[in-house]
Amino acid sequence: MTVHTPIYLDYSATTPVDPRVAEAMIPFITEHFGNPASRSHSFGWTAEKAVENAREEVARLVNADPREIVWTSGATESNNLAIKGAAHFYSGKGKHIITVQTEHKAVIDAVRELERVGFEATYLQPEPDGLIDIEKFKAAIRPDTVLASVMMVNNEIGVIQDIEAIGNLCRANNVIFHVDAAQATGKVTIDLEKLPVDLMSFSAHKTYGPKGIGALYVRRKPRIRLEAQIHGGGQERGFRSGTLATHQIVGMGEAFRIAREEMELENARIRRLRDRLLTGLQDIEEVYVNGDLKQRVPHNLNISFNYVEGESLIMAVKDIAVSSGSACTSASLEPSYVLRALGRSDELAHSSIRFSIGRFTTEEEVDYTIELMKSKIDKLRELSPLWEMYQDGIDLNSVQWAAH
Amino acid sequence: MAYSDKVLDHYENPRNVGSLDKNDPQVGTGMVGAPACGDVMKLQIKVNEQGIIEDAKFKTYGCGSAIASSSLVTEWLKGKSLDQAAEIKNSAIAEELALPPVKIHCSVLAEDAIKAAVADLQSKQTGKKEAA
Figure: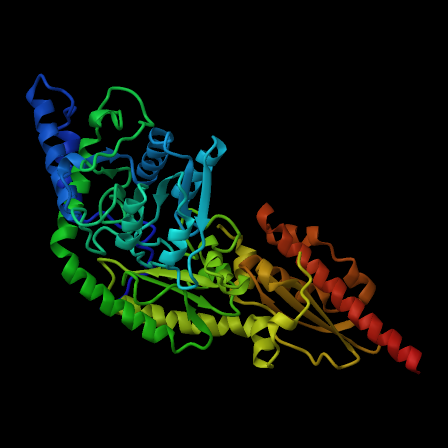
């Protein structure tokens, strides 16, 4: 089998729409174009039925009640609605929020915005393996803590936080608990009947659905209330106004149905590919896996190649589509804030690559990637004065660098 | 990020990669930048008895533009006197490689590397004259 380049290994940035999903969506663009809010004719009824079927599929994947699912434009909007909506609604209880330094920007910046309007925030630093120390989380809770937001699966390093333990602490202290699960659906089992979570954000396009659609889980028992962030026609029981994008919603429903039915087999296959990739790359000297390897989704491998600069490395391996961090920050020249929060040195943070494997990755592609990485790392280290110093036994920390 | 053809050419086929003996009195070494900032350039020049640069080598840890900037200056340096070398300006490097604004610092670093290498060589030679 021949390998077609570039090879896509950036499934954590976005996934292709599964052909089955695309097929399900098309009739709702052309034929069944009705507004699901139209109650007076069959065009509306057909669209509404499709929307409600999709809502059930989303709810089933995470074992929730369909009435707990609110459609949004994506995880960024879900995070904003959950965090700002809950903080404002419950601000009478207090104005302190807890989140984590390694959260997605959609959470960090929403919390920063709340700080601007008078809230206080604690940004917990994770342990060097990327996981939160539960005792430190406990210590951060104050009598006026109103909301906590912790992501389930990290977008850059793939580690899985102990949502159950954190949620129990929140419950015990009467803190609303929001979880960004954009990177978790179809990768880890989510059971919202059991998990002590009040609000959970979802995205379609990380799970083989279309971009531009997401959902927010809002618990009914005990009932969680939110201040709406988008006002208008009162759709989604007032939580989120705006005409529902039927075709997008149908796509998300179909994508989540496939995820529910296929995730077990798919994850086993992806784990084999990840192990193969890891074994291959560990042949290279001076490589470091970022983030805990056990409590982690198999889809993600984030590795630092010491003494090689990340941007030149990505340029060297243009036959594979990977990123040096999240797609949202790859335009900046700063090293990954997630890796910095783990306490990684600047050099290692600068030389990281995130490989993310998905539904359409093949063994041949993984083997090609390993060979490509080996040859390009060799070439760039040949060029690297830091590698030369390392080989000469010079401790780079002892060198006085002229910072610029 | 879109790179110019010239950056890509230097990046794919870097000229004069390597190291010269830094203890050779005819060799000047300049190392600038810091790993924390994401680029480190090591530039070395070797002069002949007439004070003309006859060889130049580099090693660079950094982005494609940093590698291209240092590769380009090793080409430019050969055949120049130390005074001529010190006159190479970052703007000329940036112009030749069509660097975008966010990558101008790479050309500044290359200019600094030349100055550091020239200064190292001059201090060695002054020391030698003083010793003699």
